[in-house]
Amino acid sequence: MPLSMVREGEAGIIHKVAGKEETRRFLENLGFVTGGVVTVISWNGGSLIVNVKDARVALGRDMANKILVNQSMS
Image 1 (cartoon, helix red, strand yellow):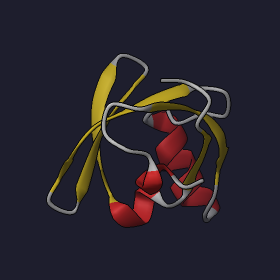
Image 2: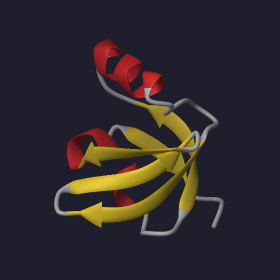
Image 3: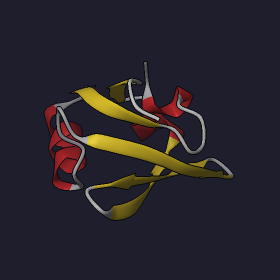
C-alpha cells in the first residue's frame, strides 16, 4: 500500500520506491530504501510527517504515494 494510506502512529517496511529515476534517487537519499522501516508521525495539512532512519521528514501526498510499504509492524 502507498505510505499515504498508513495511519498516524503506525509503521511499515518499505517494499518499493516508485517514480522516475530522479524521484527515486531523491527519496533514497532521504532514507527511503527497500527494507527500511518508516513510521507515520502525523499529517500536517497536506504533508505527511514520518520518521525514517532516526530522522523526521515531511512529504507531500504525491511523494508519499510513490513509497510502497508492507504494514507488518505496529
